[in-house]
Image (tube, rainbow, N blue to C red; front, side):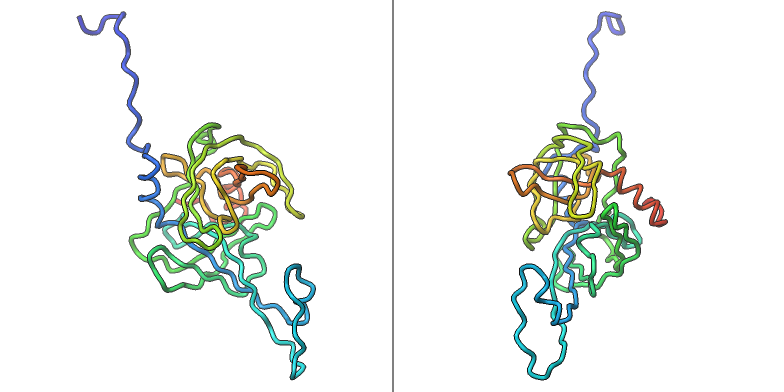
Length: 242
């Protein structure tokens, strides 16, 4: 007899918004961009930059400028052509060049908002039609142990995918003069060039922005939590994406 009180309830099947990892990558990788930053540096200042060789003497005595290249990642989060990334990726930039998936030509981006303390920045480029948009998750969507996917350009290698779980939340960290009180810890591999790229859950929503990697151990990376991202967007008066 159906409908009896002794019937076992069949567990609900996962919603259609839950994808396999390969599905997440295929569906959303086009929203991730490669960011190249050019900085004009007076030749007289190059010797003061750690890791730069002493400049050769100028034959004409001119203080010529050199170009220092920084790399990072970002992603489209708004249909107006807005890209989220880390502020430290574009800090001090003279020009910001964005490379889209499957396109050889780079486009120049403009900074429309930056928040130094929260280490977040918003760029704008003319968005080609048909590119996917990544939506921001809500704070309640962050769960320790949940599978996450990091997509970015580590070491300049386009659209590299790494997979892990959210290992912990609310991790405090200080890097230089920046303090990050609410970082997500993940074991998804994050390397130089991943900064600014999205950390995505299996529903295809951004739970964090990849930001730092532990130099003293392996398998520990950190991302800025999505609620901090939303706070930064409000403080930059850009409004939240639709």
